Length: 86
Image (cartoon, rainbow, N blue to C red):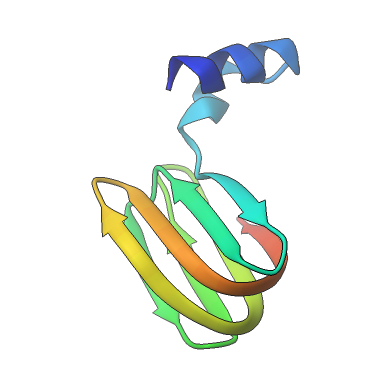
């Protein structure tokens, strides 16, 4: 988590932003999401995640859930879009 704070600081983001849902997408394979508090919606085409601040909508094809533990979530499939909600 400290590394994310350093990155946020280097990019001029406030420290609170480091607690939003953070993610890394690997093209054609899926993504890794941190600070997830709740899984709001799930289908093979869309997943909605809620964090402490705001939410994310993940869109793609053949989406499936992998590991979901202690705020970390793996989504497998071809992710084509990630959108911040609210």
